[in-house]
Amino acid sequence: MPLTNFPDKLLLVIFFLCFENVTVVPPPQSDTRNSLAQVCQQWRRLMLAMPTIWQNAVFSPIPFQHPMHLLRLAKLWLRRSQGALLSLNFCANTRLAMPAGQLPTSAQQLMYGGGAFNIVKSIILPCASRIRSLTCIICTKSVIKSFLKIPLGTLRALESVEITFLNDFVYRLTPFSEEENSSFTVFQSLPNLRRATFHIFNGIHPLDLQLPWNNLATLDLGSTAMSPDIFMTIIHFSPSLTEGFFQIDFTTYICLNHPLVQEIPHAEARHLQRLRLRLIDPSNDHRMFSLLQLPSIRELRVELHDPSRGWEMSIFTSMLEKSATTLQVLMFSDLPPPTVPDGAPPAPRRPQRDMSYTELEELFKTVPNLRALHLPLGLFIHAPTMEMIACGQLLPLLATLKLSSFSGVRVPFAVVRRNALAKYNLRGQAGTSDLAPRALAAISYVFIMVPHEDEQVLKDQVAVLQGLGCLADVEFNTVGGDLNCFKK
Image 1 (cartoon, rainbow, N blue to C red):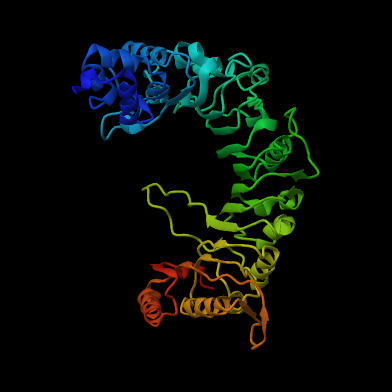
Image 2 (image 1 turned 90 degrees about the vertical axis):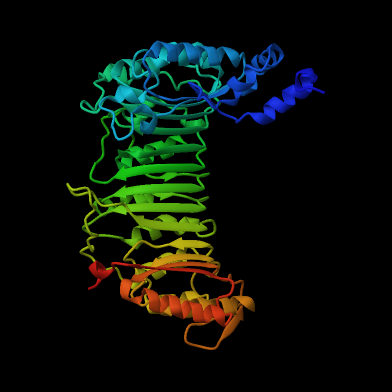
């Protein structure tokens, strides 16, 4: 039977399986929707009657000779979605926006239509009540203002949002008055908004967005530096938060001049399970860490820039004391250093302070249920501490370990001993033969960085142990690196 004689219901199923979930506007030449719509009148009629294949759209900021044609295309696509809920992505892909090898000279070139029309007034507002997910970059004061002034409750179906605010490359800040800052209404009365990501490069205060803090489950403000008091205020206002990413600058001090910022005695993130913190010079003020309570935390990622003091594990120990039974993943890493004029990153600089091995041991005692541990470059586990991990006195449930070491040859043997004890579900006392029944996990993944000159020696050692079957169930990765700057 020719395809053109197939029943409508069967064709609808075939069409649904043919299409990707997302449609790109303007459509590429290879777009399946356009190709099939040209087969015959029946197929075109059926496709235009399928709102689900038009409801998820990516609007690419490609250069176009007649940008108003892009606006007509956008409106056509949205009409075809009929009354379906929408997922709109106004992507800011510079590879699409500019010819190869060129960079945009104006922020408007990153927007769909290149600034020839206001995407808020022309595209977003006419279908605002149907938008379930919105991702876009918003540039220039007029477009930003028209977005932030969308009447409260207009985006009532909105569940997820990712917005980049960028005034322009030259004049970065958007000059809003204090009265304008206090009158943003776009995110008010949105009961369904649960996931929010904001990249704020124009100076808007995060609290001025007036988000429905009580509703939010996921909040990403990791690209926007804020002071500790603003972070604590947001945590205090967001009792339903389960996942968060924040950048906290401890060189910025209390700014109680904002009406919503409070000097909070403590903040409890009762439901927060995954937290990523980007910390700038936390050695300037430790108070936040003892005031923040994370009773449900399961995964904590910390990225640090503090060249004067480096890693001070005691501040994290005080923060995690109330999370002993929940934390399973702990990841520490250094923020990339600023680039030098020629574009090459400078060599890492060793902090002025040496960390005592007892700081790590105290931290490990605080989190006995840890499954995965990633340590930053230059933060070494001392031999006695490694021995306590090997015999299960510390981190008895650890399965994944990433570290750097000057004495990497000790690590494979520690893993062999740990896994032998785990095989018989026994925990040993360091330096003794005393064994006691206790749940003990085998280590199944190790990533270790050693000095370049030791890399091949360690790889050969691991190969021998694997050949003997001692590391048969362990994925052991060894790389060489420049660790000289961390030598005393």
